[in-house]
Length: 88
Image (cartoon, rainbow, N blue to C red; front, side):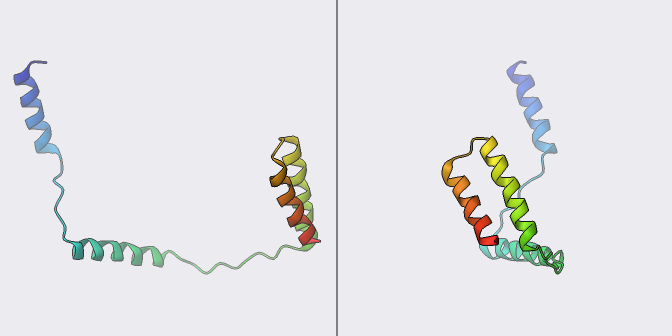
C-alpha cells in the first residue's frame, strides 16, 4: 500500500469511527452513579438455602478426598479438615 493509499484509507476509517466526547468530572460521576443505580434494580432478595451439618460434613469429606487425590498442598488440606471438624 502506497503512502497516498494509506492516507486515503486512514481518512476514510477516521470518518467511520465514533468520536469520544470529553466529559467533566461531574459528568463522569453522574454517569457512574446512574449505572450503579441501574445495577441496584437487578438485586432480588436471596433466600439462603439451609444446609445441615451432615450435608456439610459429607461435602467436606468429598472435598478432602479430592484434594488428596490431586496432591493439594498440606495447608489447603488442613483448612478443609478444620472446616469439616467445625461442621461436626
